Length: 382
Image 1 (cartoon, one colour):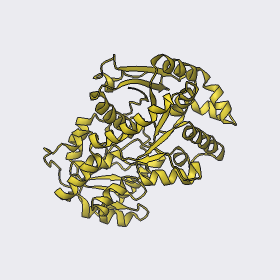
Image 2: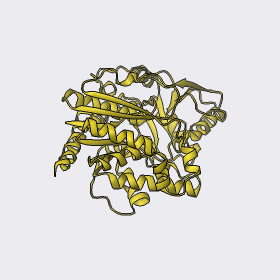
Image 3: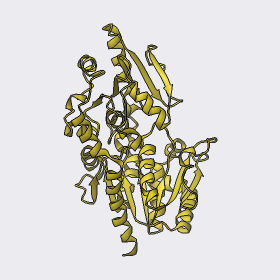
Image 4: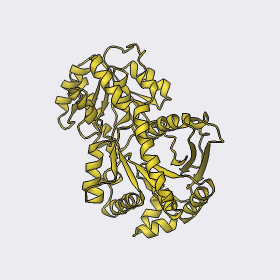
Protein backbone atom coordinates (compact mmCIF):
# COMPACT_ATOMS: atom_id res chain seq x y z
CA UNK A 1 0.00 0.00 0.00
CA UNK A 2 1.22 3.50 -0.80
CA UNK A 3 0.47 6.65 1.19
CA UNK A 4 0.96 10.23 0.01
CA UNK A 5 1.75 12.49 2.94
CA UNK A 6 2.51 16.19 3.35
CA UNK A 7 5.86 16.74 5.03
CA UNK A 8 7.28 19.49 7.22
CA UNK A 9 10.76 19.77 8.72
CA UNK A 10 10.02 22.28 11.48
CA UNK A 11 12.00 20.87 14.42
CA UNK A 12 9.85 22.49 17.11
CA UNK A 13 6.59 21.55 15.39
CA UNK A 14 4.21 18.79 16.46
CA UNK A 15 3.35 17.84 12.86
CA UNK A 16 6.95 16.85 12.13
CA UNK A 17 7.35 14.62 15.18
CA UNK A 18 3.93 12.97 14.73
CA UNK A 19 4.63 12.30 11.05
CA UNK A 20 8.05 10.78 11.77
CA UNK A 21 6.61 8.50 14.48
CA UNK A 22 3.88 7.21 12.17
CA UNK A 23 6.18 6.85 9.14
CA UNK A 24 8.71 4.87 11.21
CA UNK A 25 5.98 2.43 12.22
CA UNK A 26 4.51 1.99 8.74
CA UNK A 27 7.95 1.88 7.13
CA UNK A 28 8.71 -1.33 9.07
CA UNK A 29 5.51 -2.85 7.64
CA UNK A 30 6.75 -2.16 4.07
CA UNK A 31 4.32 0.63 3.29
CA UNK A 32 5.44 2.92 0.48
CA UNK A 33 5.31 6.72 0.65
CA UNK A 34 5.10 9.73 -1.58
CA UNK A 35 6.19 12.70 0.49
CA UNK A 36 5.04 16.12 -0.72
CA UNK A 37 6.67 19.17 0.83
CA UNK A 38 5.80 22.73 -0.11
CA UNK A 39 8.32 25.32 1.03
CA UNK A 40 8.08 29.10 0.93
CA UNK A 41 11.79 29.77 1.45
CA UNK A 42 14.51 30.67 -1.04
CA UNK A 43 17.09 28.55 0.80
CA UNK A 44 16.77 25.45 2.95
CA UNK A 45 18.98 22.65 4.21
CA UNK A 46 18.60 19.12 2.84
CA UNK A 47 15.81 17.04 4.38
CA UNK A 48 18.01 15.30 6.97
CA UNK A 49 14.94 14.08 8.90
CA UNK A 50 14.01 11.73 6.04
CA UNK A 51 17.43 10.50 4.87
CA UNK A 52 17.14 7.21 6.74
CA UNK A 53 14.28 6.09 4.47
CA UNK A 54 15.15 4.15 1.30
CA UNK A 55 14.34 6.27 -1.81
CA UNK A 56 12.70 3.26 -3.48
CA UNK A 57 9.84 3.27 -0.96
CA UNK A 58 10.03 6.90 0.20
CA UNK A 59 9.71 9.26 -2.75
CA UNK A 60 10.23 12.86 -1.55
CA UNK A 61 9.05 15.81 -3.67
CA UNK A 62 9.80 19.43 -2.75
CA UNK A 63 7.80 22.22 -4.39
CA UNK A 64 8.79 25.87 -3.92
CA UNK A 65 6.05 28.45 -3.41
CA UNK A 66 8.47 31.29 -2.66
CA UNK A 67 7.18 33.22 -5.67
CA UNK A 68 3.62 32.88 -4.36
CA UNK A 69 3.67 34.46 -0.87
CA UNK A 70 0.43 33.75 0.93
CA UNK A 71 0.19 37.23 2.48
CA UNK A 72 0.24 38.90 -0.94
CA UNK A 73 -2.33 36.51 -2.36
CA UNK A 74 -4.69 36.95 0.59
CA UNK A 75 -4.32 40.73 0.37
CA UNK A 76 -5.70 40.80 -3.17
CA UNK A 77 -8.24 37.96 -2.84
CA UNK A 78 -11.87 38.25 -1.81
CA UNK A 79 -12.89 34.64 -2.42
CA UNK A 80 -11.49 31.16 -2.00
CA UNK A 81 -11.69 30.71 -5.77
CA UNK A 82 -9.27 33.62 -6.26
CA UNK A 83 -6.78 32.09 -3.79
CA UNK A 84 -7.08 28.72 -5.55
CA UNK A 85 -6.49 30.37 -8.94
CA UNK A 86 -3.28 32.00 -7.66
CA UNK A 87 -1.95 28.57 -6.68
CA UNK A 88 -2.95 26.75 -9.86
CA UNK A 89 0.71 26.02 -10.73
CA UNK A 90 1.59 24.07 -7.52
CA UNK A 91 -1.82 22.33 -7.69
CA UNK A 92 -1.00 21.19 -11.23
CA UNK A 93 2.42 19.90 -10.08
CA UNK A 94 0.88 18.04 -7.12
CA UNK A 95 -1.73 16.45 -9.39
CA UNK A 96 1.07 15.23 -11.68
CA UNK A 97 2.98 13.76 -8.69
CA UNK A 98 -0.14 11.96 -7.46
CA UNK A 99 -1.03 10.72 -10.94
CA UNK A 100 2.44 9.27 -11.50
CA UNK A 101 2.96 7.80 -8.02
CA UNK A 102 -0.61 6.39 -7.69
CA UNK A 103 -1.00 6.41 -3.88
CA UNK A 104 -3.92 4.52 -2.37
CA UNK A 105 -4.67 7.27 0.13
CA UNK A 106 -3.51 10.79 0.99
CA UNK A 107 -2.79 11.59 4.64
CA UNK A 108 -2.89 15.32 5.35
CA UNK A 109 -1.39 16.63 8.59
CA UNK A 110 -2.75 20.02 9.60
CA UNK A 111 -5.21 22.46 8.07
CA UNK A 112 -3.00 25.22 6.67
CA UNK A 113 -3.17 26.31 3.03
CA UNK A 114 -0.55 23.75 1.91
CA UNK A 115 -2.65 20.72 2.97
CA UNK A 116 -5.59 22.48 1.30
CA UNK A 117 -3.74 22.61 -2.04
CA UNK A 118 -2.90 18.90 -1.77
CA UNK A 119 -6.52 18.08 -0.92
CA UNK A 120 -7.66 19.87 -4.10
CA UNK A 121 -5.20 17.84 -6.19
CA UNK A 122 -6.18 14.57 -4.47
CA UNK A 123 -9.89 15.17 -5.06
CA UNK A 124 -9.22 15.95 -8.75
CA UNK A 125 -7.28 12.67 -9.06
CA UNK A 126 -10.03 10.77 -7.16
CA UNK A 127 -7.70 9.67 -4.34
CA UNK A 128 -9.35 9.42 -0.89
CA UNK A 129 -8.05 11.77 1.82
CA UNK A 130 -7.60 11.26 5.56
CA UNK A 131 -7.26 14.56 7.44
CA UNK A 132 -5.07 14.24 10.55
CA UNK A 133 -5.84 17.34 12.58
CA UNK A 134 -2.94 19.36 13.96
CA UNK A 135 -4.08 22.84 14.84
CA UNK A 136 -7.53 24.27 14.16
CA UNK A 137 -6.76 26.92 11.55
CA UNK A 138 -9.88 28.93 12.33
CA UNK A 139 -8.84 29.09 15.98
CA UNK A 140 -5.23 29.99 15.20
CA UNK A 141 -6.35 32.92 13.02
CA UNK A 142 -8.70 34.51 15.57
CA UNK A 143 -6.32 37.47 16.03
CA UNK A 144 -6.42 38.44 12.32
CA UNK A 145 -8.83 40.74 10.45
CA UNK A 146 -12.40 39.56 9.73
CA UNK A 147 -11.63 39.19 6.00
CA UNK A 148 -8.54 37.02 6.61
CA UNK A 149 -10.38 34.95 9.22
CA UNK A 150 -13.16 34.35 6.71
CA UNK A 151 -10.70 33.16 4.02
CA UNK A 152 -8.99 30.75 6.39
CA UNK A 153 -12.36 29.43 7.59
CA UNK A 154 -13.23 28.69 3.95
CA UNK A 155 -9.89 26.90 3.52
CA UNK A 156 -10.49 24.74 6.59
CA UNK A 157 -14.07 23.96 5.53
CA UNK A 158 -12.80 22.97 2.08
CA UNK A 159 -10.22 20.55 3.51
CA UNK A 160 -12.89 18.96 5.71
CA UNK A 161 -15.18 18.62 2.68
CA UNK A 162 -12.40 16.98 0.63
CA UNK A 163 -11.57 14.46 3.40
CA UNK A 164 -13.19 11.03 3.54
CA UNK A 165 -12.16 10.50 7.17
CA UNK A 166 -10.80 12.74 9.92
CA UNK A 167 -8.51 11.87 12.81
CA UNK A 168 -8.70 14.18 15.83
CA UNK A 169 -5.96 14.00 18.50
CA UNK A 170 -8.42 14.91 21.27
CA UNK A 171 -12.10 15.34 22.09
CA UNK A 172 -11.33 19.03 22.57
CA UNK A 173 -10.17 19.26 18.96
CA UNK A 174 -13.23 17.45 17.63
CA UNK A 175 -15.68 19.60 19.61
CA UNK A 176 -13.90 22.81 18.57
CA UNK A 177 -14.07 21.87 14.88
CA UNK A 178 -17.77 21.02 15.25
CA UNK A 179 -18.44 24.40 16.90
CA UNK A 180 -16.29 26.67 14.71
CA UNK A 181 -15.84 24.94 11.34
CA UNK A 182 -18.50 22.40 10.39
CA UNK A 183 -21.25 23.80 12.69
CA UNK A 184 -22.56 20.24 12.96
CA UNK A 185 -21.70 16.86 14.51
CA UNK A 186 -18.89 15.00 12.73
CA UNK A 187 -19.66 11.30 12.17
CA UNK A 188 -16.70 10.29 9.96
CA UNK A 189 -14.14 11.11 12.64
CA UNK A 190 -11.87 9.20 15.03
CA UNK A 191 -10.29 10.49 18.25
CA UNK A 192 -6.74 9.09 18.42
CA UNK A 193 -3.94 10.75 20.46
CA UNK A 194 -0.65 11.59 18.78
CA UNK A 195 1.93 8.78 19.01
CA UNK A 196 5.03 9.37 21.12
CA UNK A 197 8.39 8.26 19.70
CA UNK A 198 9.93 5.30 21.55
CA UNK A 199 12.91 7.50 22.46
CA UNK A 200 10.59 9.28 24.91
CA UNK A 201 8.94 6.12 26.29
CA UNK A 202 12.19 4.21 26.90
CA UNK A 203 11.87 2.51 30.30
CA UNK A 204 15.61 2.80 31.02
CA UNK A 205 15.47 6.55 31.69
CA UNK A 206 17.42 7.90 34.68
CA UNK A 207 16.30 11.13 36.36
CA UNK A 208 18.94 13.77 35.65
CA UNK A 209 16.96 16.89 36.56
CA UNK A 210 18.79 19.85 37.98
CA UNK A 211 17.47 21.80 40.96
CA UNK A 212 14.50 24.06 40.10
CA UNK A 213 14.73 24.27 36.32
CA UNK A 214 11.69 25.28 34.26
CA UNK A 215 11.34 25.52 30.48
CA UNK A 216 8.96 26.27 27.61
CA UNK A 217 9.34 24.78 24.13
CA UNK A 218 7.68 25.65 20.82
CA UNK A 219 7.31 28.04 17.91
CA UNK A 220 6.68 31.57 19.04
CA UNK A 221 3.12 32.24 17.85
CA UNK A 222 0.10 34.01 19.28
CA UNK A 223 -1.82 30.84 20.06
CA UNK A 224 1.12 29.26 21.93
CA UNK A 225 0.74 32.15 24.41
CA UNK A 226 4.39 32.29 25.55
CA UNK A 227 3.78 35.82 26.86
CA UNK A 228 2.23 34.00 29.84
CA UNK A 229 5.50 32.12 30.35
CA UNK A 230 7.31 35.46 30.36
CA UNK A 231 4.76 36.88 32.81
CA UNK A 232 5.23 33.81 35.02
CA UNK A 233 9.00 34.34 34.99
CA UNK A 234 8.56 37.93 36.19
CA UNK A 235 6.26 36.72 38.99
CA UNK A 236 8.76 34.07 40.12
CA UNK A 237 11.59 36.62 40.06
CA UNK A 238 9.48 39.01 42.14
CA UNK A 239 9.00 36.22 44.70
CA UNK A 240 12.77 35.60 44.76
CA UNK A 241 12.07 31.93 44.01
CA UNK A 242 15.48 30.50 43.16
CA UNK A 243 15.36 28.79 39.73
CA UNK A 244 16.58 28.87 36.13
CA UNK A 245 14.36 29.31 33.04
CA UNK A 246 14.86 28.29 29.41
CA UNK A 247 12.94 28.82 26.17
CA UNK A 248 13.53 26.51 23.19
CA UNK A 249 12.10 28.12 20.07
CA UNK A 250 12.47 28.91 16.38
CA UNK A 251 15.42 31.11 15.32
CA UNK A 252 13.22 33.92 13.92
CA UNK A 253 11.20 34.38 17.13
CA UNK A 254 10.64 37.97 18.28
CA UNK A 255 11.95 37.93 21.85
CA UNK A 256 12.18 41.62 22.70
CA UNK A 257 9.34 41.20 25.21
CA UNK A 258 11.08 38.29 26.98
CA UNK A 259 12.72 38.77 30.42
CA UNK A 260 16.53 38.70 30.29
CA UNK A 261 16.60 36.00 32.98
CA UNK A 262 15.31 33.42 30.46
CA UNK A 263 17.94 31.55 28.44
CA UNK A 264 17.02 31.12 24.76
CA UNK A 265 18.01 27.85 23.08
CA UNK A 266 17.66 26.72 19.44
CA UNK A 267 15.44 23.85 18.32
CA UNK A 268 16.86 20.38 18.94
CA UNK A 269 16.97 16.90 17.44
CA UNK A 270 14.95 14.23 19.31
CA UNK A 271 17.96 12.83 21.22
CA UNK A 272 19.06 16.33 22.25
CA UNK A 273 15.51 17.19 23.27
CA UNK A 274 15.32 14.05 25.40
CA UNK A 275 18.48 15.04 27.27
CA UNK A 276 17.11 18.55 27.70
CA UNK A 277 13.81 17.29 29.13
CA UNK A 278 15.62 15.11 31.65
CA UNK A 279 17.47 18.13 33.05
CA UNK A 280 14.21 20.02 33.69
CA UNK A 281 12.15 20.14 36.86
CA UNK A 282 9.05 21.34 35.01
CA UNK A 283 7.90 21.94 31.40
CA UNK A 284 5.36 24.76 31.02
CA UNK A 285 2.82 24.97 28.15
CA UNK A 286 0.47 27.98 28.38
CA UNK A 287 -1.23 27.63 24.96
CA UNK A 288 -4.50 29.48 24.42
CA UNK A 289 -5.58 26.42 22.44
CA UNK A 290 -3.82 23.29 21.21
CA UNK A 291 -5.37 20.23 19.57
CA UNK A 292 -2.99 17.97 21.51
CA UNK A 293 0.48 19.05 22.69
CA UNK A 294 3.37 16.73 21.86
CA UNK A 295 5.93 18.59 23.97
CA UNK A 296 4.31 18.05 27.40
CA UNK A 297 3.48 14.44 26.56
CA UNK A 298 7.07 13.68 25.49
CA UNK A 299 8.31 15.20 28.76
CA UNK A 300 5.77 13.42 30.95
CA UNK A 301 6.58 10.05 29.33
CA UNK A 302 10.14 10.63 30.56
CA UNK A 303 8.87 11.22 34.10
CA UNK A 304 9.25 15.02 33.92
CA UNK A 305 6.30 16.97 35.41
CA UNK A 306 4.47 19.49 33.24
CA UNK A 307 2.01 22.31 33.68
CA UNK A 308 -0.37 22.71 30.76
CA UNK A 309 -3.27 24.97 29.90
CA UNK A 310 -6.72 23.45 30.39
CA UNK A 311 -7.40 24.35 26.73
CA UNK A 312 -4.88 21.81 25.42
CA UNK A 313 -5.99 18.41 24.12
CA UNK A 314 -3.33 16.57 26.13
CA UNK A 315 -5.03 17.77 29.33
CA UNK A 316 -7.52 14.95 28.69
CA UNK A 317 -4.67 12.40 28.83
CA UNK A 318 -3.19 13.88 32.01
CA UNK A 319 -6.59 13.73 33.73
CA UNK A 320 -7.12 10.12 32.61
CA UNK A 321 -3.90 8.96 34.32
CA UNK A 322 -4.47 10.90 37.54
CA UNK A 323 -2.30 13.96 36.82
CA UNK A 324 -5.04 16.61 36.83
CA UNK A 325 -2.87 18.77 39.13
CA UNK A 326 -0.71 19.38 36.03
CA UNK A 327 -3.61 21.15 34.27
CA UNK A 328 -4.44 24.78 35.07
CA UNK A 329 -5.93 28.00 33.71
CA UNK A 330 -3.22 30.56 33.00
CA UNK A 331 -5.58 33.50 33.66
CA UNK A 332 -4.37 34.00 37.23
CA UNK A 333 -0.56 34.10 37.08
CA UNK A 334 -0.20 34.11 40.89
CA UNK A 335 -2.02 30.75 41.09
CA UNK A 336 0.13 29.45 38.23
CA UNK A 337 3.27 30.46 40.13
CA UNK A 338 1.98 28.66 43.25
CA UNK A 339 1.45 25.49 41.18
CA UNK A 340 4.92 25.81 39.62
CA UNK A 341 6.49 25.87 43.07
CA UNK A 342 4.49 22.75 44.03
CA UNK A 343 5.17 20.74 40.87
CA UNK A 344 8.79 21.55 40.04
CA UNK A 345 10.92 18.40 40.52
CA UNK A 346 7.85 16.41 41.66
CA UNK A 347 8.01 12.68 40.95
CA UNK A 348 5.43 11.04 38.69
CA UNK A 349 4.28 7.76 40.23
CA UNK A 350 5.18 4.53 38.32
CA UNK A 351 1.48 3.63 38.06
CA UNK A 352 0.69 6.98 36.42
CA UNK A 353 3.71 6.79 34.12
CA UNK A 354 2.84 3.28 32.92
CA UNK A 355 -0.78 4.28 32.22
CA UNK A 356 0.43 7.30 30.24
CA UNK A 357 2.84 5.27 28.11
CA UNK A 358 0.14 2.70 27.29
CA UNK A 359 -2.16 5.43 25.99
CA UNK A 360 0.55 7.06 23.86
CA UNK A 361 2.65 4.05 22.79
CA UNK A 362 3.74 4.69 19.20
CA UNK A 363 2.97 1.13 18.06
CA UNK A 364 -0.53 1.08 19.57
CA UNK A 365 -1.48 4.56 18.31
CA UNK A 366 0.12 4.11 14.88
CA UNK A 367 -1.77 0.83 14.42
CA UNK A 368 -5.06 2.64 15.09
CA UNK A 369 -4.14 5.22 12.44
CA UNK A 370 -3.07 2.45 10.03
CA UNK A 371 -6.52 0.87 10.30
CA UNK A 372 -8.17 4.18 9.37
CA UNK A 373 -5.81 4.60 6.40
CA UNK A 374 -6.49 1.06 5.16
CA UNK A 375 -10.28 1.45 5.46
CA UNK A 376 -10.18 4.78 3.64
CA UNK A 377 -7.93 3.40 0.85
CA UNK A 378 -10.57 0.76 0.05
CA UNK A 379 -12.91 3.55 -1.06
CA UNK A 380 -10.59 4.25 -3.99
CA UNK A 381 -11.73 1.02 -5.55
CA UNK A 382 -15.45 1.23 -4.70
